[in-house]
Length: 262
Image 1 (cartoon, rainbow, N blue to C red):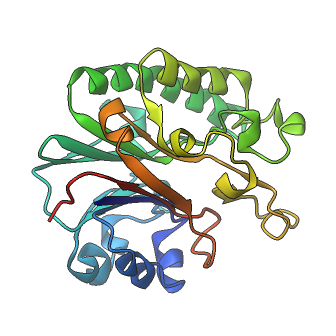
Image 2: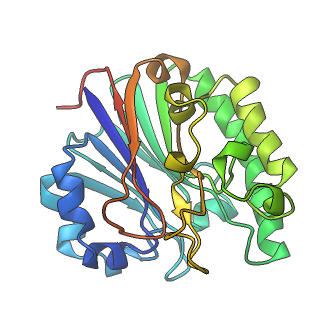
Image 3: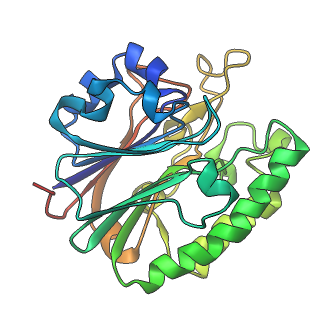
């Protein structure tokens, strides 16, 4: 069995103080994909660099306290790649890839456009730049799992208040159409939706800190594992963990009926 977890930490140091490491170790995951580190390499403790014996790789943003992604794995990868375009988004630390045999696991953090029109324009630039990357990944002929915070709710069932959010970043028609193209044109698979086609409330992975969004489960499903068809077809179980809170996101776990990485 192959277990992969994705989690936006909203700050690795903050999540650390909330005991994210003991939880992650207890899950016995083969790979843990992390997003929004909000730290530079110099900020990472020895334990973060070698979490409970796992191999750890981080792609930090150049800007302090911002973005950043990471991968923890029980097995040492054959190869690790930081970044995908050599441009503005690599400087923001949004993509890291680890190869294990014929399997690649990628931790991805799409920009949020909610803070300003300028950041929404940056998000659209990212989508324009990343679609060809999704094409290129499919053309490799490998099994690939892209884990991360995509900052897009794809369908109406993926957020509580879809009617009032149709003009808000994360549920804009252009963003949703982009994800549809990823699935329908390029053949990538939304693993959670493959197993749970119509689940609503239980699928949410992020809750605003405003109001009582968490208490009332006014959430969004914006964290995904998006995979090539072969490995996606081998997904047998998936869950969103809500018993503890490590950040404003919840961990998304998927078990695949595939060899683990030991």
